Length: 283
Image (cartoon, rainbow, N blue to C red; front, side, top):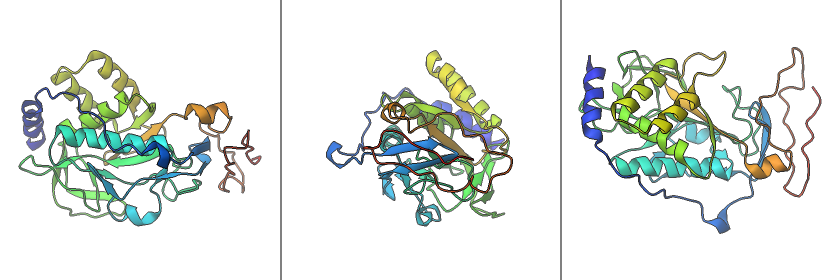
């Protein structure tokens, strides 16, 4: 099958490139004092950092660009910029397609259960064309079959016939590796489908990736509970920044949803850094 052929080609073309230096950091004097409040499924965001519409190695295409969801903590924005830049440095023509992050002040986001506190981002898998060349991001979140081929999309709207593309093993693994190795940001979860996890870990083993890196990836890559899919994108979640934990604002654990509550989807108040604690409305 074509996927197996391209996977083998990816193994041969990978080589052993040196790890690229990370670039694209927000200058210190321009960094907002972002605060992640509450949990990812019931939280808010203060003084958010905004991801540019495009940068070195990444782009946020339509329709996501117009959804007002280009915001996150400083740490999340830097993770996206640095990791995509590293992949672009390793593989010419790489363009990471970024989908939803959070609203500027966080809170509920349509079509998502989480993404409320600036610590979540959806990244569309790197793809390649039939010749093995990078497939430039378009407006589709392509759904990959067991053969590693995508001809339709289920999100952000269902489209039956899209330009054919293939799952890019080498770039997707390079992205996962770059994010996990980031010294300044703790990647807590990378939600993918079981089949995508199997592809990535098998590929990592084939290229003799560092055993410690594979072990970490085995824990970080997994399917989210009670959610099907993730054959069309990876959902990355970073841990709470230490400063926000110390102030009692950021919560790693998901907030339990009460069986009956009209107040559940109301915005959680996110205080300024001058405040000491976060007071969540009772549910």
